Length: 97
Image (cartoon, rainbow, N blue to C red):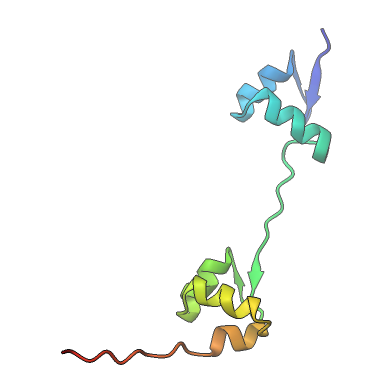
């Protein structure tokens, strides 16, 4: 049986490493083949037109007080990011009958 060395630590099998990393051996095997390791996780931050960083597009929308649905629609229509985030949504005037 072949030992696996990962981050300076030896494991008897892929299953032992998977148990420590709290994942399945299949997932771990896939990650090794695709990425060459397990701890490949890049933090992707979304930036607005001013350079402010947000964890997700949804959090950016919450900050600018627009719905995520509106953000995506404007993006599909080809609006630039500044216009998407700074254009206010219209207020609907409902009449009480």
